Length: 304
Ligand code: SME
Image (tube, rainbow, N blue to C red; front, side):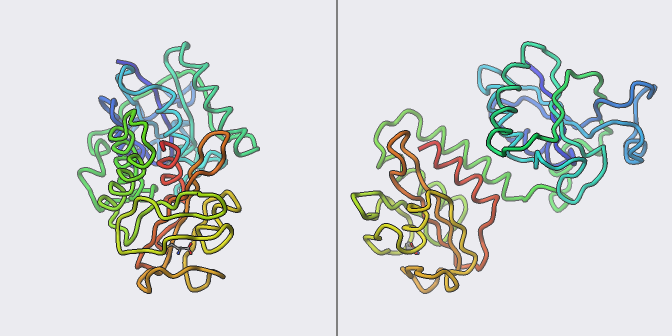
């Protein structure tokens, strides 16, 4: 068993998230890295004054043979805003600063690698601490498993995050090392459709200058989409995820069903060959997709 400590804003959400990661034995809410002159164990009320220097932190105990430190760190950076100083979501204060604290110095190179990769991707210095753990105190019982005890309780993370984490891990496990790309797309479309209850989930596969309908779930859809046409052709041409809150407001949207109100299209990359397909998802609800969907569906497409 190994430990790593993540300060990711309000610990209720961070703890709930990491307790759902396969290979994590326990996630415990607590307080870390207080002022050196603070004596003894802080209470929630003391930490809440924002004068103790403690950060709400989650101690993650994990089995390294099942989940790597690299994956844990990558997931941590996925659920925080690493450019935000002393603020995550609605929560403001030094107690909500972000940080990764290690108790094994051998962990530092992996953490630095992930940190640098995020920094390079964002092109700005991160507001995230990366330090050896100095001190950690477990929080009071009422703060442990808070969101299990209070399913309607406050959470600074979008609740879809927890569903997407489960989906992401299940897609990875079910695909295994299956080499056939059609089988992989078919399984992925079925899992997303079943878990997330979207109206239409499917792949369009790049064939020459067109996208051709691939494995999908939902009502029948158009068979071919030209390069640069519709939402799918735009995502392919511009090589980016396209979120459409209102399909009627998107110029050139191709309506396969009049029931579709909003849509997201995520490119699927095949290494050096570039985009080999797009994942297209439609919802009957307006504005059903945002950056949370873009993040997790992008991670799922990266598994393909
Ligand atoms: N609306 C898509 C076409 C595919 S259907 O949504 C399944 C588009 O504009 O590219």
